[in-house]
Image (cartoon, rainbow, N blue to C red; front, side, top):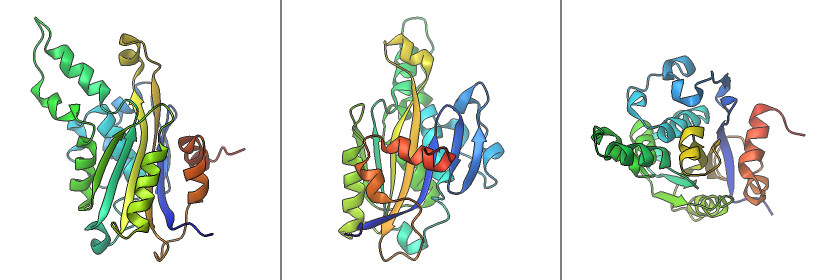
Length: 227
């Protein structure tokens, strides 16, 4: 049976860098994604990128690499859903803001908006003029399945014309060590449309959806290191 949706764009970030169906591999320097300047990666400007938190920067980089701003027409954008699943979400910003409230520290009010995991989706909606449903989920260590299912259902049932689904984390080593967690930099974005879309299928959606490690499947395909 054919899949009810198709993958027309994809992006991935890991410790190596960022890559996507609309971006040749861009390797990070020692500072990782925190040290990336938008103009070094993409030609189209993104004035808001500098003020984003680390998680938001990773999500925006990944979405741009997937062709989020190029593959959909205006009608589709008006009904494009945004779905996020992350284990740690904006924990990086949570810890930073909480630390600024400690005695003797200077409060950082500009960080507060980024203590919501859905803020990065709002940034994507503004940049790409997406006006569909929005869903942010906090997952378990291997809990991307519900987000993939929800994105599929939104498109398959016609509730959304397309869906941009973001799964994964960006938790730096320093913050992870402070609270006894393993650092993790692994994020993937997938742009989904219905079968009637004229865009070619980029990845086998069924394989991605049913994989034990969907991030690994997408990353391997984009980096060209599938075995």
